[in-house]
Length: 219
Length: 219
Image (tube, rainbow over all chains, first blue to last red; front, side):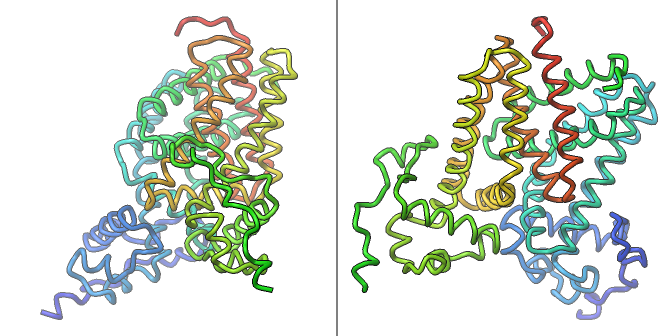
């Protein structure tokens, strides 16, 4: 039975893993990679990043630690992949919404509203972000990767916002949108009040839409 | 020499420590309490909450662990006090600015601008917040206290915002302001780009001021 535990395919790491961009360094289409990511997300959400071991993640799937290690060089690499996987799933949806839209401020805020709903439907996502931020304090490589993900996300959000207005503020607004998403996720996580966070997000979308509809005043 | 290590005054905990509000449960005016809080902030920022022990915090000050424990029942109580101390220092300044102001939207955004500058001048504050959020995932009492601090802060910010307009959105806007402060602190922490975060905050204050200046439209 041991042989079934041996990977049948080469590791999913691609050559561009080391380039520091938020490149997809693991093959998320590989069922075993996907199952490890899913089990890791569960373990991190349950016990936190620090207290979780690669062995425990393997145990969830009946796999040895060495198999998990074969696909992911370290726990830090694994938590980054879990976060990256989640981010890119959201961003792909946002890109899709923008592609199918008319470029109006209304469409931009509708797309951002759908993004909020998607994020809120993933209850472990905020806990995972907090774990990454915390772990990044003691892991420069993880911090660099998390920053890369933020930049990727900002690019997509900026396209959503700039689609309706070429305001020079679009970079600042994109940074703001991401901060609001992160900040309100923390609010909801701490206070457990989904409605309060949602109302604040709606207030934000109101402010944003007003700004996008106003003629650029050069300020 | 042992006797000099014994506390000369009763522990600084007040009866209301257990009431769950963000009450000031430690006497911050007590120099020993203040020195422990300061040493703890330094240790948490350096090594993180999990890896720091009460013994190490004591060592910073040449105190035994038992002395630290005499003033703070647990590491969780200590990190809460450190965060609470920092929050209340900021909030006291914000209250002061509001008291001395004219209640205009311009004054509200000026006060919030000063708040940002104060937060940014404390480089370990964001790391501490992230440590608290992370530790709160495994400590319900700490989470409850962190949520209490958020509510305290929201009340002060709402007064700042509602001073200029009695909009029904003031609660939502106050929640939003705190989320932006938390979210942009994370942005700056991850990317190390102070200017980017500042620009996004300025963009936010611009949106907020426009909203506060507009007549309430009942939406």
